[in-house]
Structure formats: structure tokens, C-alpha cells
Image 1: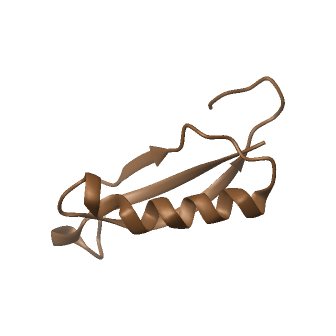
Image 2: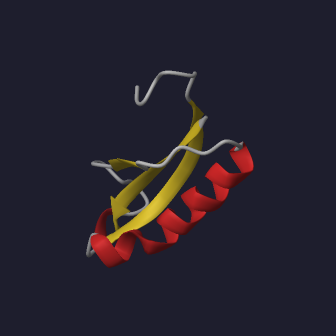
Length: 70
């Protein structure tokens, strides 16, 4: 299983981003490809839920069976 992780920064502090915010999806994906699609969609919509923020990076974290978060 994979979990999408997004790092968001205040647009006003870019590109330094001294206080990044890490967002984790609450969905788990069977494939890394599904995770990537979800991560990109989340990164594109960060500004809708967190005014002034923009997605800076993303990654898909592998989660062993039976583990929900790290």
C-alpha cells in the first residue's frame, strides 16, 4: 500500500519555505501509480483549502501491510 505525502509552503516565503507544512492523505493506494495521481491532484488543490499556500513537492510512501501511518 502507498500513501501520498504533500509538502506545502506559503507563497509569500517561496522559494525558501522556512516553515513547510506536511499533508498526508487518508487514502491508501494499491499501486504507486494510483498514489502519484492522488498526490498530484492534492498538490494542485492545496490553495483551495489553505489560502496562501501552494504545493511544493510530493512523494508516495510505501506502507507495509497492517501499518496505517508512520
